[in-house]
Length: 78
Image 1 (tube, helix red, strand yellow):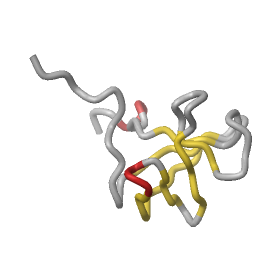
Image 2 (cartoon, helix red, strand yellow):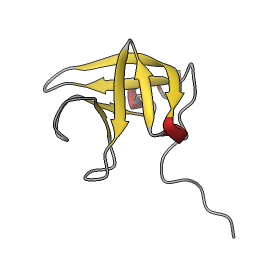
Image 3 (cartoon, helix red, strand yellow):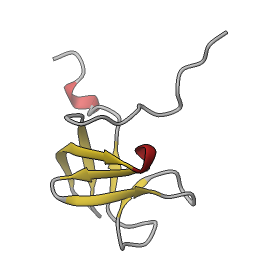
Image 4 (cartoon, one colour):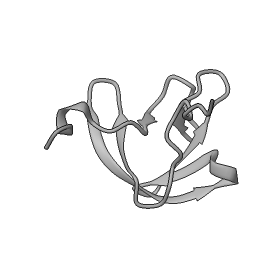
């Protein structure tokens, strides 16, 4: 029985959410590199971290600014 991926596969043009400390901003993936382990969003590079499985902005600690590839739940059904 096939299973679905644990996370959506990133693609160019995919909308994402950027999580800062207390702020969530929309963004769009403009490039995918390194076999899908590096994403460019709004000119910033995000890398997939082994420690937490998140795409975190390059040169930041694993708890820094990160991306969600999941759709914004507030937009569902609209």
